[in-house]
Amino acid sequence: MEKIKIGKVVEIEGLNIIIEINEKEISEKINFKVGNQVTPVLINKLISIALLNGKELIGKIEKIVENNRFYTEENFKKQDNKICIFASLIGIYDYYTKKFDEGINNFPFINSEVYSISSEIKKNIMNISSEYKLKIGKSFNDNDVEIFANPDILFGKHLGIFGNTGTGKSCTVTSIIQGLKHRLTDKEGNLVKASPKIIIFDSNNEYSNAFENTNLKFLKIKKEDLKLPHNKLSYIEYYKLFGASQGVQVPVLKESLQRNKEIKNDKYSFSDIKDEIDKIIEKNSEEKNKDWNTVKGSFSYNQWKNWLNPLLNRIEMLEQNEELKLIIDYNEETKNTVEKIKNDKENNVFIIELDFDKEELDIIMFIFSKLLYNECKNENIVLVLEEAHRYINEEDIGEYKLGNYYIQKIAREGRKFGISLIVSSQRPSELSKSVVSQCNSFIIHRLTNKSDNEFVYRILSNHSKGYLNLLSGLEKQHALVCGEAFGFTDIIKIETANPTPKSEDPKMIEKWRDNERKK
Image 1 (cartoon, rainbow, N blue to C red):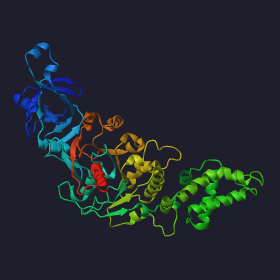
Image 2 (image 1 turned 90 degrees about the vertical axis):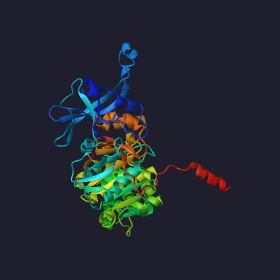
Image 3 (image 1 turned 180 degrees about the horizontal axis):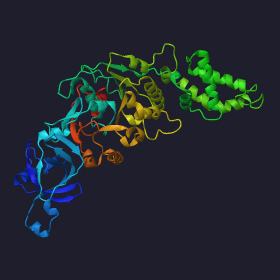
């Protein structure tokens, strides 16, 4: 679409202006849009106002109304049905350098002429200045304008992907990862080859076939093949894992761990920890011990047992959970999954099945993220948290809440060491604020929950807040992109993933019909 005159400025209030459309042709296009005919005046469209220095003010259309709603009764009777546009000024475009800068240092005048912007200018405004570019979709209002992201920021810092169930979050995650093989270019537009290393926490088994025939080599790690031996934990982390209380439990647990480290050279199981605690109880109930300052007979065996039973029960509970024990208990033949991923030179994507209940997931997340943080610095790994509210819920805060602990450390410090996050969730308002605050870029699909919309409002820049009213009506596969990785805030259609993850809505009637046929 080429540049078209729209109307003139009739009111200025700060960064907000009102434009009166007096062009009959434009008015008719707005009121009587036919077929695929494109009008230059739509919500979210960009407009321009020429300045005297060869630059142009760029604004965004926020609202369109009939003029006579605000005029006098006399004007109303004249049937002067002009149209007014409410727009916000967002930045300045330089024709000579073809660059766009956010922020305003000039203002229009009353009767300044207002124009639509051409597709070429839109492309320049949306352009990103980076060594590499990743195509992620097309502008919703201008289908011929391709939208790119800076991949170093998109993957090198933290990315938030939010939206209701069924709006396309998983497809978006898949699309941007697939794009690393098909849509990654240098600044001249030449296709670039890269071998990423991306870990996906797949809670719903959605990604099992998402990377077949994509040139991305992937490894599926089933829950029964996940190995995260606990003996990599520090003393303090053991206190958290077992919920050890200060006073008696922490010192006894520490002594047990010290003995196991000395005797078994870090090759110890839950049973070994528990056995050493029992030995400590026996010892301290029979004789003087300098560490405990107790004498024979001061505290009985039963007293020691009562103090330490909650700790022993916690260890025993973990030991009796066969599924969890196979994952985190020490086994001489066990190979650390994180270490395996780190040393894997062949695969690009690691899909980890995490179909566990909340408490099990909490422990697994704690140990996995600790190992990742400690052992994979400078490995340039991206960790995708699908259904992130399950792992990093804001309510999971407290002395013995495990899941958030190292994820928050990765969020705060990980990008310095080559570990970054993609946080995907249907409930952004429930996520850890500490983690989300570290996200530099966002892809936001349809959101209808009031709390989630309020949360998004707080993370949007001032000139982007007008987009919030559009979020509840976005189609599937459409999203608002904003933040450091993108050249400009805009609503776009995400590039189609091929193949797509298995995230379709359940076919209830077909299933019930099958049930009927089997009767």
